[in-house]
Length: 202
Image (tube, one colour):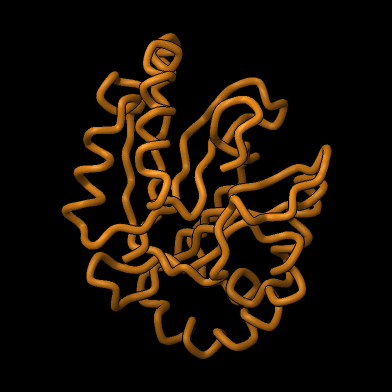
């Protein structure tokens, strides 16, 4: 099973992240085979971390919850919110294989679907995939739908994409079939930074 995990930082504990960083890196290294993608969302000036975002594969809900519960930053009080959602691995490529370029800007796009949009989403699925296809090779780092806990109902999307600016992201979304047909209650757009130690490709 595939999952999207977002761990939102607690601004009241700014020093906690530094305290548990080495243990956090080692923990993720020990689970490297589970990751589709991992990194952090940051402010647009790239100075402050907002959250950790993970795309992972585990056998079941119990395993992913255990993984998150034992994550060193989480145990150390770095996060104020933890969100785990079932996710669809649409791109079939891992972040480590993404063709990176110097000075590229990357973005986390989290679409929160409106309730009761599963059938409408199914009607738009072919158009949605066709719109994304030209971006799959050099722009999308990871992408996929968010599902209900039982995997039966579409509830949104969680994507990582490389685009040159926030305006470029807005332009990209403006004519995307799900977005333009009002399937989302809200969409979060945040800058994304690849995870790992300095110089490490993950």
